Length: 471
Image (cartoon, rainbow, N blue to C red; front, side, top):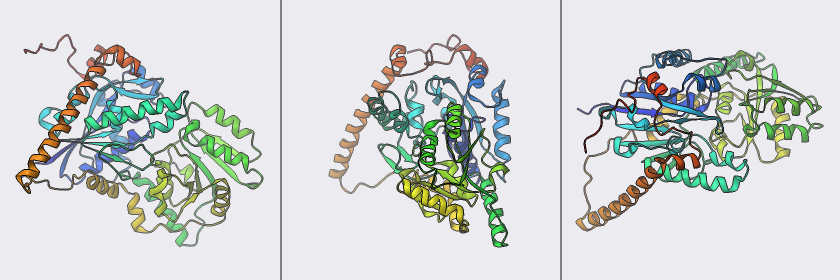
């Protein structure tokens, strides 16, 4: 009798930070564990109080990992209709102000005991491994699957010396995913190419959005007015998240869009500048603080405008479609998954954007068929993940060789590749173990090992208390 798969999902963020790598892996863990056929552990970053104050909104902080665990579970249970049955563990981490990212500290593979190490899912494998110094993932886990969430190259290109930086980041991303992952899943073709990768959107939407969409469909079927508001956009309020493109389009076509009102929702570093740019337009463009997209405030909007091209797959676009709205977005690889939905209007140029916006505001959304509603669900996303990661297949322990000659040739080829990879791992481990080299490549100072404070907060053994190993 075969034992259950144990899947450990490592991710780079956690609630209450409302970012994709906090929300999507949480839902993935819940739905993978739903059937009871697998043992699932979600491994999320633990930040000390000072870093929590920099990252988490509304002054939310946690004094202990157990307190944080309770918060995450309560948030999830308010959004799903079944009892979640997975474990949550924490790895030590610190917040990088310049990168606006949480980075692991020490060897985070230690979070999972060796006897439970089976399958590792690395949400943002490049991010988790840029500075990884510790046990090799492929040695500890039988299968390591990376899921690419973020188009880092697109963000880096917008920085000073962006062209050069993007080449460095591209190489680093390729390097660490090659040596630490057996397989990589790219959510869309908007990301760079990766070794041993497939393209598949393995994300779903919060079930609450599908419920909102069903309620709106019922209104339409009864001949009632389902949408009483016009156009809006929601996202983290930084220029790179589509605000620059949207305000540029609205400014360029103010005369053609006369009478159109657009509401922007978001919070972020560029909020003040976005507000100032909006006030300079003759169009009615109102700016509001960010809030949960499932908030009743958004239910009555009919048109979601999203010109962003920095996302890999935009979560808010999927949520808007689930709510039964019309979405207007660019003809870009990040939106390929959404082209199957009749309410997704794809524009090819600026004139197209204007025409489609006016058209969308003048008509009602098409009813969302059941099969497309399912495509947006986490049930469908989980099915796609299991297929893409090949976790739904029974792999025979011994594969019959067609001939001794072909077996010998294949063996030599595999051995050569393995030796090359081992050398590459050795080089990465050497570089990532040198503080000066780590700092030169952007690591947080003294993040090679967790400090005493992180050890105390997570109940880890400090370096001083660890027994020395006999050689």
